Image (cartoon, rainbow, N blue to C red):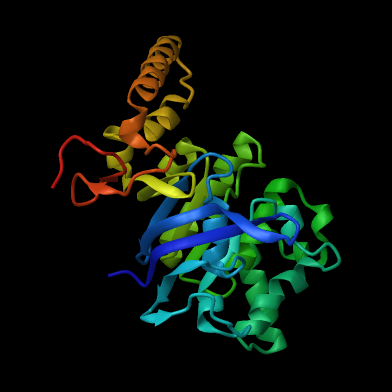
Length: 314
């Protein structure tokens, strides 16, 4: 059993209108998802922009209010719970944001940015604090004199490394990574991803890796959740999703991954046409009359698909 369980999580935003500004409808940003996290594993949350990925991450860490459902952390219900700055949950669950520049205070030196979580949770002496900051900079491959600089003096990849250093400062159990490399060029992306994998192996971290890029998720994650319109359409291990995709949305995402070989490009083009035809003909198999995703159905012990009929089954 994992250290954290998310049960039937929903985050709805009211739509107001009319003369009295009453609630006339709701936006179902996250609409009933269930997950479980184990130590040392990386989980991928994949979907198009606006499907609810970032809202899921922010609701787990407490930046978005949960409408219903529960978050159980080490046996304790922490859903929408008012937590003080020194709570164990705040210490153990950290986040790396998509826009590294905006997540770093431009008025503070790196030394103070990294020291903030240390002061909140670890209660070190000034000498121990400085030693810890130097260790964090070394872990992310930054020189010691970087602590005296301001965020604007660093490149995008360096800022993301500082964001990672801040996230691991409290020795967390889970780091939520909200598209941490989408704003970086390809060579820096590979550098940051390989580095994140190294520190995961070294410190036994768990990741929730939020991305729209299935190639990145394949490199990083053990288990994958495919999300569409606030619901999971397919979940499973990396092998389940890449070698045996069942839901049409998963197939569309996989067929959109570019192939660099000329023959592969033609095959991928044919695959995209076939997948699109399947989507047009069998739409009702995957979505109800309102376009809502069906509930997940197991087709193996690890593989679940939201469809009326699926191959296999247990």
